Amino acid sequence: MKLLRWYNRLGIATKQFVYLFFVTLILFLVLAWSNLNEAESLFKAQVTRDAELLVARTNQYIDASLDSVENMLLLLSTRHDLLDDGNERLAIATLQNFAINNSSIARTLYLVRADGKVYSNTQVSYDIIGNPHLQGLYEQALDNYGAIRVSEPYVSPLSGHTLAYMRPVADERTKEIKGVVIAEINLDLLSSRIAPLIYQSFALITANGNVVNRLEPGEKLLPVQPRTYPPELLPDFEAKLPELKTGVDSLSVGDERLVAVKSNKNRLGWSLIAFIPEDYFYKDLQPLYTNYRTASAAMIVILLFSAYMLSRSFTKPIRRLVEKMDRLHDVQIVSKLSETRQDEIGKLARSFNAMLERIHLLLQETKRAEEQKKEYELKMLRSQIAPHFLYNTLACISSLAKQQRIGEVRQTIRSLVGLLTFSFDKHGEFVTLEEELEGLRMYMHIQQVRYGANYAYDIDIDPSLLSNRILKLTLQPLVENALFHGIAPRGGGTVSIKGRAEKGRLRLYVRDDGVGVRSSDARDVLRKQTNEPSRHRFTGIGIANVHDRIRIHFGEPYGLKIGGREGTGTIVRIDLPLTKLSATNDGAVRFADRA
Image (cartoon, rainbow, N blue to C red):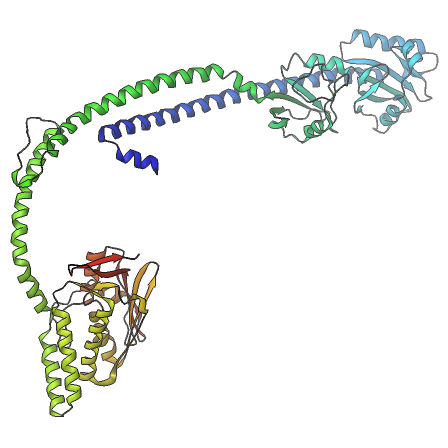
């Protein structure tokens, strides 16, 4: 709000300069920010797609490397003769030959006979160190009905961090299981071959969620356990890896966010996950940020200068015109402005001169209108009184006099005089609600004298509202309409007048229990004007007249609303502002708004 008030106090030139500068600057910054975000998104998407492609190709390489191990196992499983007695030297030589001549990732090969005898390509090392895992691997191989089976990672005395491929060896003729061929994989070699293909940190996850690859010393991106060699991932972080979705996902490592690109599972059910720090994306965008900052600074300077020059060229002639107009203090002795310019300023000067001429004419017409005002006002007040009403009321007084009902004659004459005085009062068009109700009571007294007790009424208005101002003759036309269009056709009834303060407004309700009105007719009532007063009416003011007068004086939110139902009656709601009449020292009437 303070900023808005400051802006409103500025001159037109400064306002135009500030507006042009800030609107153009905001537009430029929005476009620049949008383009920068778009470029950032495109770069990030490109890097992510490249990482996905690398991961997919690396996964294919892993499948190819494991294929060579499977092929070697298939060939060895056909050599059941190597497990025969007396072929120990042949078996060891064959295993050594396979290990030397096949460029696979298999590190140690074993032939385990059914009697527990073991042959290995590193027979001397096996005889010295042994391998406690072979018995468990042998049993796993026999449970797989002849197919190749892969173990989960473990640490072998001969192969280090490894996992094993196993396949039973059976006699082709008798189908008797003679042993099992086992190949321990060199996982360190597999990791070293994968590392050049993926420039990010990565992890191989088995089907059971175990991490296959071994981390390099000095790993900085992934969280590792302290004082461990080789480095191992923290258990909490390692537990999150199998839950990552295939494709692009993200996870947190302390205060750092990582983008994880996970491949589909290969034939073994393994997945390869590459990790990219989010800072990597923004690091390569720094030159782009620098270019945008430089362009933004240059653009701001250009906008500042352009907005200033544009505002100055537009407003300088207007300021000169304002200076001349400020010298005009008396419209009676106004000098015309120069009309030499042909642009918009010249048009403004010509319009100003034409406006001065119209002002002179309006002043003269206003004087003539003021002179005729009193005469018109008197004619209007006189035309409000319906002659038939006076004739009928006087005839009623005459009838009462003949019946020597002197008290009723006196009261009726007093009500008629009061009603006429109220209507002809020249103090103003506004009265208090209390005065309006008093005029209504006098009117209803006359009607009850003329038509008897068939026309009843009751008033229920909060006393605190009686000092509120309303237009004179607001309620009387509505009550009159209820009497002769609602109650009269039924031969009698009651009109209720209620008043409440609701939602910051004065609301008056005029309700009758007469014949009612259809909803379609209720909408048309406010559009109909009464051209000639009937013999029953006191004035020629109709419902539409009351509605229009209220809207002219108080605005569109105020006026009448009509509702009802045939056979049950009609209700009219009057919405007025909550205002009070207050008298000044000079006797004039002022209005104080309470809303």
